[in-house]
Image 1 (cartoon, rainbow, N blue to C red):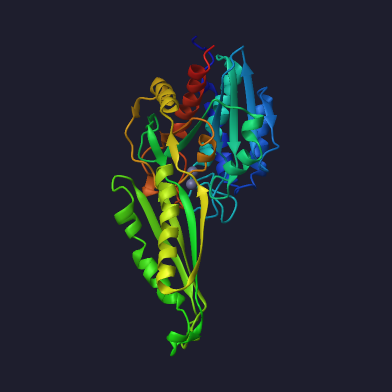
Image 2 (image 1 turned 180 degrees about the horizontal axis):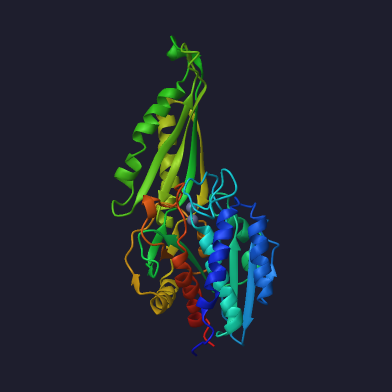
Length: 388
Ligand SMILES: [Zn+2]
Ligand SMILES: [Zn+2]
């Protein structure tokens, strides 16, 4: 059914709000002001609001008609702990904090869709508007899921969206399969027997074991993982002994790093293989080893049906939609939602990279010209997935 009430009538309000949020950035789980504004606007629109999850999360629920379907739309609200160096009238008023990833825009676009859907009600079913705190490494999505998001707000499918410089503001990329890598940490501690540096035969040397381990590490990606499957293993910290005690072989040495993959299988493989290598090296050198693999964020892998639904909605509202776009080596904890129910994560153009500034750059800014496309996309997705 055609809808008369047009989203663009709200554009000036949404643009002002986006700039206001940009000027008042808040870090993960500290989004008090932002979540207060979001909750108040949802309530004003007649949308049921829940603020009981994950400290500062806001979930708005809008139900229309007799439809039994339910979908979740996620926007993240948090900023980054970094200074803003770009000059603009709505520059961050908080030293050392800025919206450098465009989450101010994500928040406003989902709000725009929520306000519009609450007015037009051109759907039948239930929409959960998920305003998530703490996407930037602080675990907001995981906490929402662990605190019972899906039990409280059952969803048949979830959708996420991120702005992407380099695509036009009326352009989106909706791609099947992997979108973002897993992001995990691992820790290896070799435990030997300390001894005099001049008498290595009286101890068991954990420093040499660490050296062999690091030099063998890239054989996991080079010799074990399928060459057609992307994977990264990096040793990023190494420690052992004391530079003030160069005649002492220490008791232990430590190596830690990161592991990235685009599939659950390769992620499991990296966990297994790093441990296998560490234990093998330890055995060869007669030392003990502690190994810990810390799963932080799973990969974001689009479900085929959810991606298809997002593609149809994107094609309704965009001048062009790309169906081929390279996955990002970054992570997004949207993965905790899409690991539970089918999900799709899509990219919305942010226009040319102004001054070459990309995500997490001190001059980055969300492009307000993209607000309309994003809000229309969310609206159209609901209308298509929960037809009236
Ligand atoms: Zn970011
Ligand atoms: Zn982001």
